[in-house]
Amino acid sequence: MPRTMCHDACVRLRRQRDVAEAAKSESSSSPSPERDALRDVSVYTRGDLPAKTVFARMGNMISRSDYKCCAERRNLQQWIQRARRNGVADHQIVWWVRRKGGAEMEVWRLLRDERFACAVPCTFCKRALSVFEPKVICSVSDSVWFEGRLSDPNSPASKLTLGQRRLFGRL
Ligand SMILES: [Zn+2]
Image (tube, rainbow, N blue to C red; front, side, top):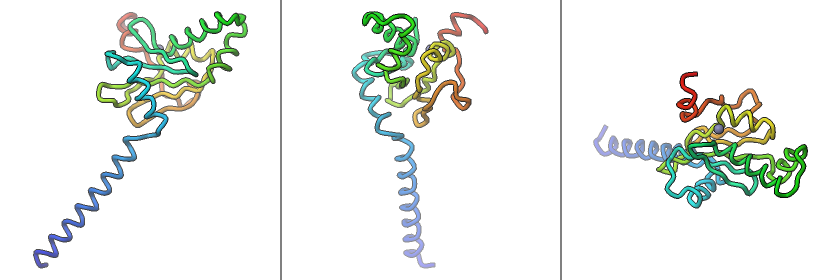
């Protein structure tokens, strides 16, 4: 084979590979526009928080985790407070929160480099959420999201967080 023909074939092959790789990285980097919007929300609410901070949103209520409590349970507490302030009777709080909050909770965590990290609700949050039974949308990794109820058999397994494991010792 003359040298130029070989060279042309090489260039063509390389170009094909580059195009295929670009298509692959494009499809994995951006799962959906709604998920990307969460990055923007976090920019306003994050400040100088560590990368382990989890955010949870139900309706127009956004809360974040700290060393004392997870974002999901904090969000539910804030909804319950809001219901009480509105004079909702105790036995109607779950119904009221589901109606006002939309019964859908988004949970996510961003690393320093703006990639999503695992934010599956912990064992305690799973129990608290089971009362309200919202649809949970949570990041499992940067490109993998779980969408559904935590009672579903294919939902990701709940674990204790690192802080909880430290608090309770070896379990
Ligand atoms: Zn939790």
